[in-house]
Length: 199
Ligand code: GAR
Image (tube, rainbow, N blue to C red):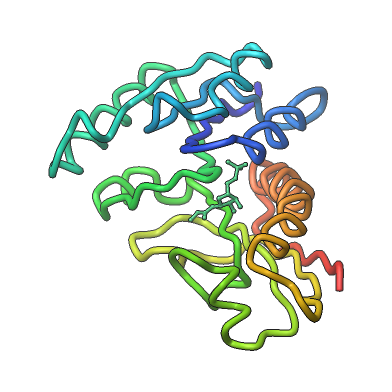
């Protein structure tokens, strides 16, 4: 029996594709559902192409009501009998009630070397701070934003003249390497941090 994985996206979905493509053969999981909070998310078309069922829960249909938005999300995840949730560029902040429901069963990828630069604009903030290295982190999702136990990190050098966009472009392929490896280990019960070094 493989674990039923649901992937939550908001945008292009390149991490979702990397995860879904890896979930074949002896992988302990399978991508069973992709949900976006944005009906225009490019990742939905990519999920269709991969023949993964999709759903949209548009947060704009729940103005000022995060609980109802999350109740709708949760209902769809339950309906599809999802066991583990992977956030992959999902840009909504989740309430403690939702993270508690998925405690130990929800992971996220964040474009910084946590605990540095939680939240948004991570590449620019790393540049502004004069960092010589940057990277991404996969972590368990807890009530506090970008703060759960670290499951893996990939690091890379910041080069002279780098812009935020250059960092983002160079980091994304590392995200695609890290996240599938970490999810594979996580589903197999291995939560020891995996460290990839591209410096
Ligand atoms: C990725 O860089 C991911 O780390 C980041 O959004 C991008 C999504 O790209 N996630 C966050 O910033 C979460 N706070 P993708 O849609 O192509 O996977």
